[in-house]
Every structure is written in structure tokens, then in C-alpha cells.
Image 1 (cartoon, one colour):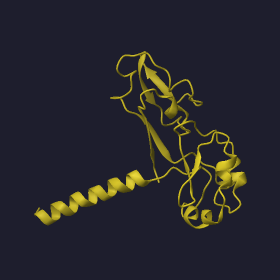
Image 2 (cartoon, rainbow, N blue to C red):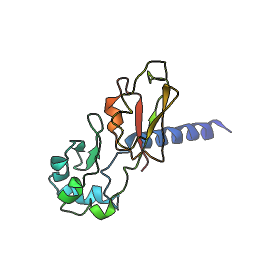
Image 3 (tube, rainbow, N blue to C red):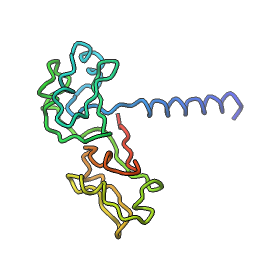
Image 4 (cartoon, helix red, strand yellow):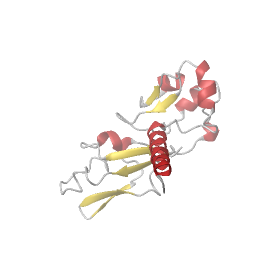
Length: 163
């Protein structure tokens, strides 16, 4: 491999990493991800106003994104009901397209401190503890609702959009 190939490879890796960081969590009621960029431009953000948990944020480009820093999604359907441009539809209801994980190096429970802050708000019992410590997320139960994220005192729970 010559230098040109090496730098090309490294630069493509950085671009993929940047794309990963720029992925946005969307409300879980859409069929066409591209509709956010076209149809939401005409809207006044009713989905965010009616969100009971106040986790929908309207970004600068007028598209909704989810912010789990204070709460999680109850899948209450209010955002889909409020959407006048059919970007969000109850018929298209799905799980939030994200992966939730626990960073073992920053989780105090993995460090031997008894903490159940993430387990208590989990509506699906998707967080299991091996022995008294060592929490893990059961992906088959996790709905990616995000309630566990804001409850963690060390911010050890990470969410990554799949889309």
C-alpha cells in the first residue's frame, strides 16, 4: 500500500465516523426518512409541542429529532397524530431505530458500586444484572425508548442511531 492509498483509506474512515456522529434519532412513526427533509420544512413543529415527555426537538433545518437527555419515549402516538404532512403516521409505528448500550468503563455498577438507576425506569425489563453488578441490555427486550439514559449518574448509557 502506498501513501496515497493509506491516506485515502484513513480519510474515508474519518468520513464514515463523521457520518456516524451526524445521524439523528427520529420519532418512531415514519416510513420514508427523506420526508423529514422535504415535508417538515412546511410545518410549525406540532409534534414537538404535543410530545408529553418533551423529547422531540425541532432542529435548525425544521426537522424533529429525539433528545433523551431528560426523558424517554412512551410511544404514545401524539407526535404522529399531530403531524399534518404525513411524515409521521400511527400506521408506520416502529421501535426507535437506535442501539442502546452500557459503557462498562464508565458505569459505576461495573466498578462495584450498587446502582440500579438504569434498571428502575426500564419499562421492558431490558436491563439485566449479572450477579449484583454488571448491568447488560437485552437487545431482544429493549425498545430504545431512552428512559434509562437520563437516569444514569455517570452518563454510561450510550445511544447510537442505526439509520
